[in-house]
Image (cartoon, rainbow, N blue to C red):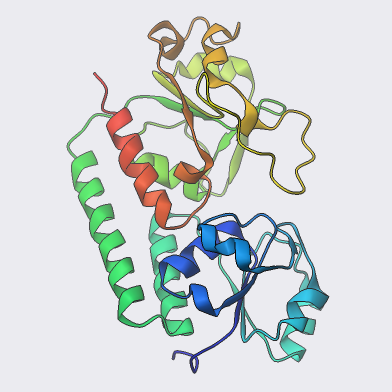
Length: 276
């Protein structure tokens, strides 16, 4: 049952913030994290700490009815209980598949009273996803490797929305146990897989690197990597992707933020994976 409108909402993840605005609930969002940077209207919202370090006192001071959280955040039982004692409903949302993303968006739309606009958006995204599934059912799957970080060498596993999104886009992916969210690999395993396409977090030549995210402490953030440099990486020299020059940058919005723009990214990647 939808909550009585208007309600006040705090979002604790950039992807959740995008979802709320896309559902037409932007005016009801009273707090977001310092990492929430899309859509531009988020600039006028109160910041409630970092994505990984929410400020509980600040959240409560905003008197929200609903907090949309991510299950992997530092929102332990005691903090959750404190929010609940303040009369705040906490909705956890961490989709592991595109289907779970769309289902969760529909639930949030109903919970927050998004109305017809929210229902229509979710229906539209479902239709686009169904068209992609039909398209990919008739296509071959190139071997694709998505490089996230290099130290350690990491790629998405089957229990992640990124993995499911790549599969929906038509990628052939490294096999792994279904419960694994991220795979930690060696370069030898990548070379043995011999990807035909490599995609990686980072930038294209001549483009400014993405601004460092608030709270990022990585010495070499993957989003600042110039991906073309991987073409001359000594451990990739022998793989098919490097030989054919098929190493491409992907922005965070294409894969790593499970929200409405994820479907845009899947459509773009499906075209990329259809290269002859």
